[in-house]
Image (cartoon, rainbow, N blue to C red; front, side, top):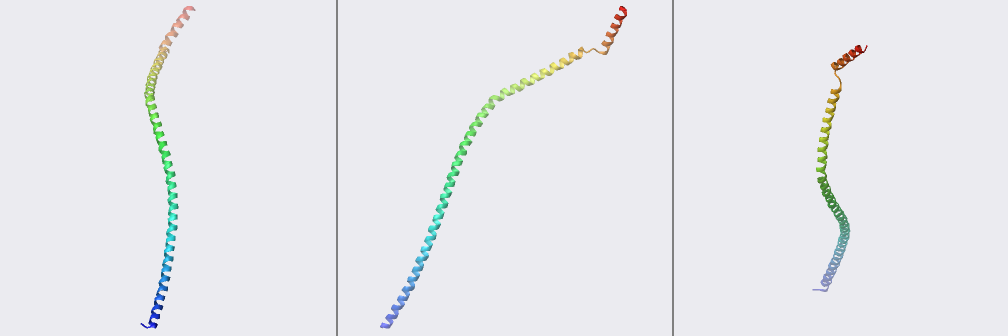
Length: 141
């Protein structure tokens, strides 16, 4: 090889290395930018995950409180049902007694009405009394 060819070859290798160096620099810059974006996105995702985790924790606490309240309400309902079961027979007995007393009061009112009706003189009885009074007056006069 001649010196000119060698120099030309070395110049071409140098140009190729410069070109490759630029491409590697661009590649490194692109990769760095990509990694930076990925890092930023991961930070955003972590922030979102923390926020969602906090919300889940709050909701879990609310569910726990509501579960406790439901258990309390169920216990109160059992107590109320037990009270209802105890009161119902007494209430039914009261209604039965009230019904019997109402029937008896109605029966008594009917008898009183019959007695009162019987005490009211009929027209024939009034006429008879008038005749008796007239006879007494005639005798007395």
